[in-house]
Structures are given as C-alpha cells and as structure tokens.
Image 1 (cartoon, rainbow, N blue to C red):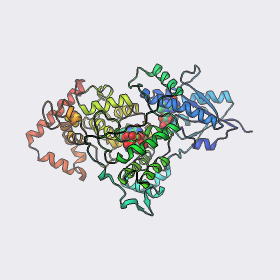
Image 2: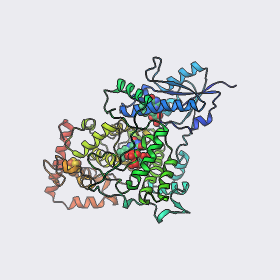
Image 3: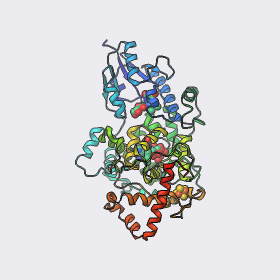
Length: 510
Ligand code: FAD
Ligand code: DLZ
Ligand code: SF4
C-alpha cells in the first residue's frame, strides 16, 4: 500500500460528495477535521454560528465514519490542539506518518494561501459543489463590459434546464421580480423556519461555545438550527411546503417582530454543505409543477440560488484577494457602536441589529436596505462594514459575504456588482415595512430634529458623490429632484445630515 495521506475537511465542506473525498481512498487515507481558534477568531464570529458549525462538523465526522472513513477529529478543547488548520495537518501527518494531504479548495483566499504555505504539500481540488466553476465564470465574464447577474442567470437556467420549456423560460419570462415587491399587509402569518431541538452532540457544542465565546457579541439562547443533513432536508421540505408559496410576494417586506417572514433560512445549511444547490432548486421546481407554489415565487427562489449565489462566488474569485480592501467611494467613518448593541432610536436599524444578535440572521432586505443602506449613506468604512457582516451572520463566509457587502451593498468595488448604489431615504423603508410607525423619528419629516436620518443622509450621499454618479442614467432622476429643490432647503437638508454625521462621530445617540 502507498504512503498514508490526509484528507482535509473544513467546517463549510460538510458534504458527502466532496472533491477531496472523491480523490481519497478509505483504506489508505485519514480525514482531518479540526475546531481551531484561527478559524473562530480571524474575526470574532457570532457564537451561534460557531456552535452550529461545531455541532454540524461533529455530526458529519460521525457520518463519515459510518461511511467507512477513518476520521481524526480535533475538538477545540483538545490540550494538544495547535489551533490552526496547517498546524493540525502537520500534527496529524506526524501521528499518521503521512507526507501529503488532499483538500477541496477553501472558500477564502486567506485559507487557500495558508494551505499553499502549509508544512506538508496540500493538493487542492476544485470545489465542484457549485454550478459554475472558476473557468465557467471567467468564460462568461470574458469580454463583457458589465457583469450583470441577470445575463449570467439566464445562462445558468439554460445550463441546468431548471424552469425551462425547451430553450424558452417557463411562463414566457425569465424574471418575475415585478410581482415580488409587495409591501407587507395586515394579517400576514409567516410560519417561520423549522426549529430543531438540540440533540446531545449539539448541546455539547453549545456548552463548549458558551464557555469559550459566551462573552462575545451574539446570543446562543433558544438554538434551533439543524445541525445535520437529515435536519437540513427537513428544513428544506418545511420551507417548500409552508413558506415558498408566499416567498415571492413578500420577499422584500419587513415586519416588526417577524424576523423570518417567508424566507428559506437555508443559507447556513447550503453554505456549510449540508444541502446542495440542485436538490434545493429541484424541490422548489417540483412544488411549481405540482401546483403547490406559483411561478413568481419559484422563479424568484431559483434565481437567488443559481443566479445570485453563483454569480457572487464568481465575482469573489475573479476579483481576487484585494477585493475586501476596496473603497471606491473613499468612505472612512468608524462603524457606530449601535451595530453591536442595537441601541439606536432608528427603529428599523434597531430591529435588524437585534434580530441579528439574537438569531445570527437577518433577511436580505434588512441586510441591504437597512443596515447596508445606512452604512453607505453615512459613509462608513467599507472594510469595517465587511468585517461586521462576516462576524454576525451564520451564513457568512468571505466568498459570499464580501461581494454582497463590498460590492452590492457598499459600492466599494466601484460598480463591479451593481450598476448603481443601493441607497434610499426613509420612504422605501416605510413602504416596505411597519417599522416607521413605532420609530422615534418621523419618516414624513424631511429636515430638522426628529426627521428620519435616512431622509437627510440620502441627499447628503448624492450631493457628496455628485461627480461620480450624476452621469449615471439610472440616477438622473434623483439628481434632477435634488436640483429642483429650493437652495435654502438643500442647505437645510445638508446641515441636518451633517448633524447626524457629527453625532455618529461623537458617539452620541442617533
Ligand atoms: P432567502 O431570501 O430565502 O433566499 C434563498 C437562498 O438564496 C438563500 O438561502 C441563499 O442561499 C441564496 N441567496 C439569496 N440572495 C443571495 C445573494 N445575494 N448572495 C448569495 N446567495 C443568495 N448570503 C450568504 O449566504 N452569506 C452572507 O454572508 C451574506 N451576506 C450578505 C450581506 C449583504 C449586505 C447582503 C445584501 C446580502 C447578503 N447575503 C449573504 C445574501 C442574502 O441576504 C442571504 O443569502 C439570505 O438572506 C439568506 O437567508 P435565506 O436563506 O432566508 O434566504
Ligand atoms: C467559520 C469557521 C469556524 C468558526 N470555525 C471553523 C473551525 O474551527 N474549523 C474549520 O475547519 N472551519 C471553521 N470555519 C469555516 C472556515 O472558516 C471556512 O472553511 C473558511 O472561511 C473558508 O470558507
Ligand atoms: Fe427607519 Fe426612518 Fe422609518 Fe425610523 S423613520 S424606522 S429611521 S426609516
């Protein structure tokens, strides 16, 4: 028999069908899995995310052993733990007499570089749990002036055959988004995600994380995530049955006290590898075929997975390791403390941040149009904003978080992801939520003390970035509204915005 080898399985590689496993051999190789501080602490991840991953890693190790593999698993509190992935590879290599390792390419440049520099050679294989390989995305992007998701998405529909009728999209249209922007209405009763009672392994992971990271930002109480494939599959079935039919209609709606609305709550499971893109999309497509969910909902959901998710990953690997340091708008304001506490008079921000602290989750529109929008309008340092998003969400890994934050939300990449910045005043939030009703600020007030900060900061943003955006045809109407405003009124708005910014700089309550 040839020399023993190691197979690295990372915390977000919890899939039985993994390229590294396909390259391996049950008789010859040992799988290495490790809970290490280098991963828990490169940013101080939300304890809920760490508990989820540790529980899921531990249960995946059990599943791998049942599948005939030898697994060497290092828990966080192992006294010999070197607390880094390369360190654990080296320790395993010495113990097993292995001289090389096999890995599936990690989803972050930091860890790819660490494996390239590891003390034993690590052969990396592509992560083919995605629909588009790096080469596929490059081939699509090659020669295009603008990398718009919609065109990429149509190619992915053609490639997968999902919601296709021959070479035409089902229903005659590629995108049903105009049906998907309904404001909330009274009497909505979202079912919420499937809640899983923690089993023994999950309880142990929670106890360990509470002891080690309990003082960190974020709550571990009432932990309900699935932590294995069976649970994740049950969550998928629950979503398809109970929320998918309404997912499209209220995809952008926000309601106080309803953190989940009709969203899937599947991203932690998909990103960790417990679910695959195809089975998730096929389950949704089947619901449409069976007449259980409308086309606008199913198309919208499938677009998020084979469109946005794949496109975002393509951007991360195409743009390269410096992406997270981009700052096209030259924003430098420090992230306000209320991003960590929720302690602000802005009801919308408070709700989004509190949900995030409690659940390690907020839905897309909260991330984009509340916390993201405020950060962009207020000119927060995009790198600090990026780190915040990477810390706080259970689904956050750099490959998916960074293009959403640096690109889509903060326009810090100068327009690679978005053709215009996602900014809005309070009106949008008022239309799509019930937050403003209980806010200390007045959304209808445009200037002065008590006026919604989003209203004033919106114009301040447009005014200070006039040189960059005034020629953008998609923003022409905004600038013409601003220009039509009375000069005194404009001065008052800018002064009001400046007061808000000064309060942020002073650490005063906003
Ligand atoms: P649903 O709204 O039910 O959507 C279904 C699925 O589509 C999700 O599970 C997810 O897998 C996929 N999806 C939807 N939109 C996106 C997108 N823009 N990028 C990638 N996948 C998408 N998503 C992450 O997975 N990790 C992140 O760290 C992350 N950070 C974000 C930061 C910002 C500023 C913004 C605006 C979005 C971010 N997203 C991120 C995308 C999106 O908000 C989440 O995927 C979604 O909220 C996850 O919840 P859900 O499963 O209930 O999603
Ligand atoms: C996010 C994370 C955390 C918190 N902890 C671990 C860990 O202890 N061991 C591990 O193998 N992976 C962990 N991860 C996931 C990695 O950070 C992830 O693989 C990289 O960020 C690449 O996406
Ligand atoms: Fe948010 Fe402004 Fe509405 Fe308050 S009034 S909830 S700050 S949008």
